[in-house]
Image (cartoon, rainbow, N blue to C red; front, side):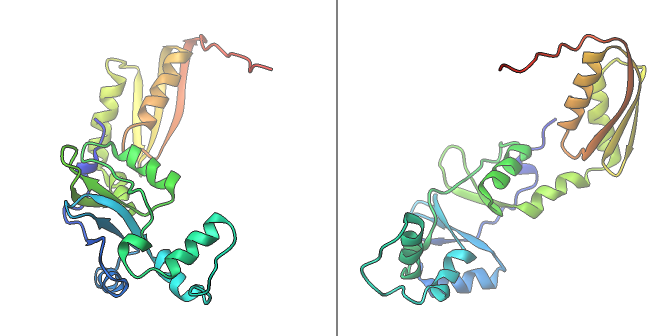
Length: 218
């Protein structure tokens, strides 16, 4: 059973409106010890995010009031943010969000790919923000008990009574014998996808090697 965002998310989301001032954003982030904060519209829907990096541009860019502004697009955007005084001008858009039903594994992948530390959780029907998911929340998945992991792994193994399972610190060790090499590979791949499994060490043997290796196209 895949763990969903609803299982680890925080049900209270700290956010600011689009018209929030620079000072208000700083106060809110300091009060709640946040590295980034969601920006919402009048309907409570996330429209962007303001990070510490966005705020620090105010100090890092001593020529923010000079004009005209030339340079690459990124530099121009940074200078515009350095001159900004409201959330709508400071924020990075679009807002990257997840829903309570999003698998935790997908949320983790999204955070890694986008290099972000938190994700607003929205109601799938209304788009309104209903919670927040931090990177630290994802780590709770790896705190699942050995009993929980074993039950889920046993469900993957099914009626293969010849396969033995050992679990230590989230690392799963498989031993025993199966009929085909492809079956051993399938077991390892499926168990690796179980939420909370850190690694799988396979000592499985098999009666028949049936894995097909397709050479790469030249």
